[in-house]
Amino acid sequence: MNNAALGSFFTLMPACLLFAGAAIIWLRRKSMSSIFQLLGAAALVVVVLAHVFEALRAFPRMGWGSQTSVGHYLDLLCASLGVTLFSLGYLIHACVEKKKSERG
Image 1 (cartoon, rainbow, N blue to C red):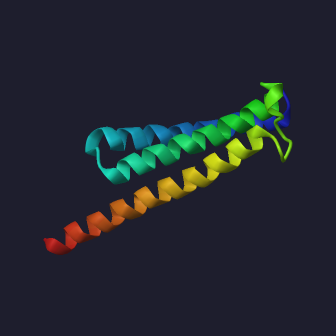
Image 2 (image 1 turned 120 degrees about the vertical axis):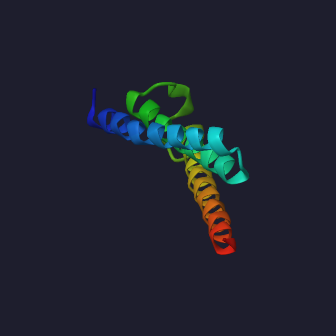
């Protein structure tokens, strides 16, 4: 196993923990903010899995590593969605909690 694959597998663990935490929050609250966080965490797991597949050279037809490949655009789209949705969900949750604490 090469260093890229090993690094990708180590990165997979925190991404899965983030997804598991977001899933637990969603199961408890079922609010819009928790759905955004769950979808964002899922997109980040897809990003890490794309890097794992690239390092293992799985699905060679996707052209992993090439800047014009489907894998590159999948990685870019999921990274953008993941960061945006997770951050938006956290921001909405923080604003709602602040309003609750101001009321009493």
